[in-house]
Each structure stands twice: as structure tokens, then as C-alpha cells.
Length: 143
Image (cartoon, rainbow, N blue to C red; front, side):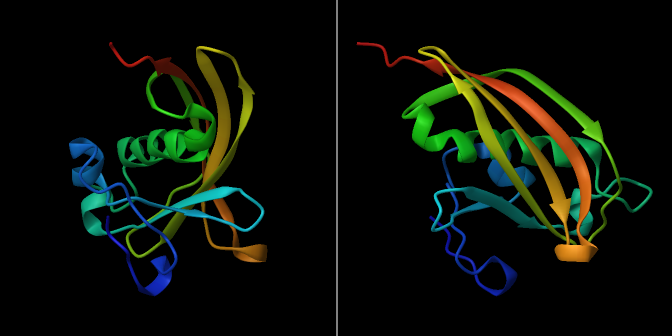
């Protein structure tokens, strides 16, 4: 598990559990005192498209990671994304500290319904980059 410093101080990762996310990120999460989870990454040129803005696929991958980090306590095991929707709101760029927040809308015995947003900045300078929603299907362990 990576324990980063700088703007990511207090965050942790699941390094080594998802090769694609490890390659696309690295992404991190932090549990706050009120129980909510925030996810974050530091955007670099490798997260950008040819125009110099955050690649849409990069933001969607981060949002998918966020689904699982935010639902971790409710999920209590393995799951797969069975539905994912997003709307691009604004562009980000290399150097941005990109975060996400979200919530579990409903959890059933087999599925978890989620929604959230990816953003950069804070307070008056906050800029929402992407709205997202998704459904995680719980995967039962084989006996």
C-alpha cells in the first residue's frame, strides 16, 4: 500500500490489486472523520489528451475507481461495474489536484447504486469536471 505525501498526505491506495488502475493512476482514497470517502490523484501529462486537457477516459477510469472506494464498506467484498454513466462538465489539465466525492444511493443484496462527481479546486475555486453514476454488482466468492 502506497502512503503518499504532499497534496495526497493522508490518502492511501490499493496498489497492486488492479493492474489497470495502477497503470492509469495512481489513484488514492481517504476516509474522513464523518465516514465519507474522498478519492484523489495528481494529474500529470500522461493523464491528458493531445489537446493538453485531462483525457475523458482517464476521468472515467478515476470515477469508476471512486465507485469502489466510496462503496467499500457497503460492498464488503468483490464486485464489478455493470453500469456506468458520466457527463463531462469542464476540462482539467496537468498539475490539477483532482478529487471525487459521492454516495451510495441504494444497496440491495446483489447491487449497489452510486452517484458522484469529479472536481478540482475548493470553495469558490471548485470546478466540477465530471458527474457520474454507476451500479456495482456484488460478486460472491466461489466455494
